[in-house]
Amino acid sequence: MSNGRISATHGQRPVFDNADALDPALRRAMDRYERALMADDKAAMSALFADDPEDVPVVRSDGSGMLVSHNAITVFRARRGGAPSRTLRRRVTRQLDENNAVTVSEFDKTAGGQVIQTQVWTRLREAGDTEPCWKIVAAHLTYPSPAIDRRIWRVVGAPLVSASKPGPLSGMTVAIKDLYAVAGQRIGAGNPDFLAGAPVCERNADAVELLLDAGADLLGIAQTDEFAYSLAGANVHYGTPPNPKAPAHVSGGSSSGPASAVALGQATIGLGTDTAGSIRIPSSYQGLWGIRTTHGRISRNGIHPLSDSFDTVGWMTRDAQTLGFVAKALMPEREPVDAIKELAVCPALDEAAEPDVRAAFAAFRDAVAQDGTGAAEFTMAMLDEMLSIFQTVRGFEAWRADGAWVQDHWDSLAPEIAGRFRHDRTISEEAYRRGLERLASARTLVRGLIGERALLIPSASSVAPLLVNDGDVEQVERARAQTLRLTGIAGIGGLPAVNIPLQTADGLPCGACLIGPAGSDRALIELAKDLYRRSTR
Image 1: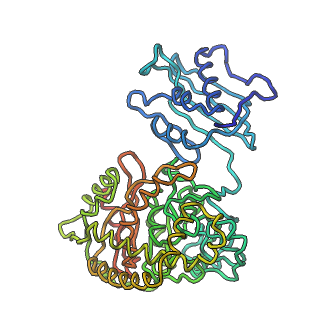
Image 2 (image 1 turned 45 degrees about the horizontal axis):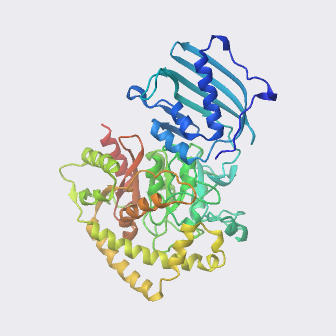
């Protein structure tokens, strides 16, 4: 239950413009809504929002994005945990005609700052109403902007580190995942206790140095899931970075902070890592372009590891052109002109995706596939075997990287992260050795099936799951298990993979993943750009 409250400034009556001319029923409806909001009376608030009249959805928006439809707003309201306390200072209402009005209210937040709330009210009769009633059909809130949104940033500057010299990335800013070394800073890996005991870095990670040398400014260090060990983006210590393309949904991890910084327009480039999909998933969930690079192509020196066999450097941008610019800065060496010879598809893998994602992906695939498009013979059984290999090798290596710290700090971890580490410590050296042998065989198989082609599959099994409360991550974990089957192809193969942003019929972000031969990273980006252009003709 919210402990929010609303009152008039200094105990006086709030100021209304032309109050006598307003319909008294409208005034009463506005008062009922404010009382319900402060009491966190979800049923009353739901009843005061129109139920998508005449098939036109109601809208609620703020700086994090838009919620479209009565159901989406209801779900958001159920998960936010109540509204903050605030004091009404002033309200100006214009009744536009007998059945429509707009009201703008100014509030002081108890926590500091002002909130401006704009609502559009319409008088209509809905099922169960005995007479026409005033209902909200649109609402927008402008909140005070925090100096630093701790959900996104651990530390930020103006910039934090300036570019070393002018270059092709001059004028661009970078949000880096809190796994990368920055000279004079500590690596926090998404955990405040780990941060407190970490040494100050003496030099930048190699990838960070390359970006600075290319003219980019390092804006700040952005949040990550604890030890990069999740695909959700949630962090019990700092909160879940917002997803502006899908408010009330998770941001996607573990490169969640850099992804949100880019999606919100706070940074140009989000530098992250991808072990099991941690670039591709937040990109898919937030409508971004993103690339996981060929395993080992870009130095991981200065990056806190999760799994040496799978960790790769990657980044996210709002457009494909910038994605390519960064690729040239981080991978300046030449690639074969004919690194990718054709496109391949595998419809059998569509069953790993939920129906809405499957439909959006199939429409994209149909738009870009040509007569020469080949078929790749992957099966769901193969994906299950690859997932088993991945879990064994990644699990052993994760415990090897972080186990010494984790075993003395179990209480510092989120329950689901602790659960993964508890399983990891049971993996034997012998199981790991066999896992490496299986990995070598599976990597040969994947690379053989793809050959000199680019494989097109869904990036993730679903759209971003809804935010959850009270540590209940069951929904996120279900999506995670299916998504890992899809992301495992590039992971097991050690191959580059690009997310191409798509959208479901409901307007939620999803993605198509283009997986290329080893070392074809820049060519893969160019092919992805070409396919995207082809799909929009």
